[in-house]
Image (cartoon, rainbow, N blue to C red; front, top):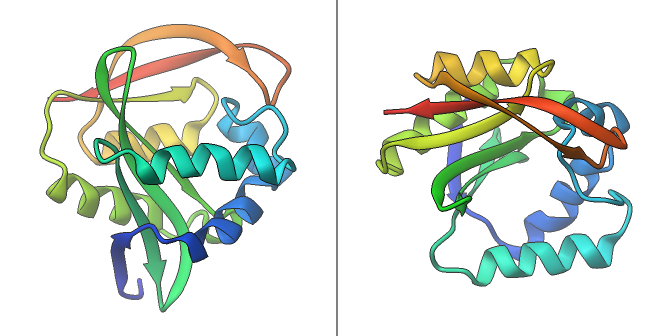
Length: 157
């Protein structure tokens, strides 16, 4: 695989992230997404909160000088958690696994949690390759699917 770099998210990355998150198949796979993936104002407002929160670690994933996604560590339900998003055109190339491994070298908080819809096999494989183990289950409303969806809770100790 080509050289992968993580760097701090900058404002110029946001239109690329927005485009990634407008993909219908990607939204269906992720399940737990914004209510309207085509609403730029809502997207920008959410990312402004992320960018101005010094407690959130946010990195852009770059391969061959191209922004391909992001990985973020934040707090949810009182626990440190990670999330990531890779543009669909970059799926299946090992980028998510490599990026998450790099991110986990920088973010040494343990335990660290992640969540994935039970049928999001690709994301579950990436998390397991990076040392996460399934530690529980939950159900939540998934905007992208318009219904409650079962999810795995994973932990990295």
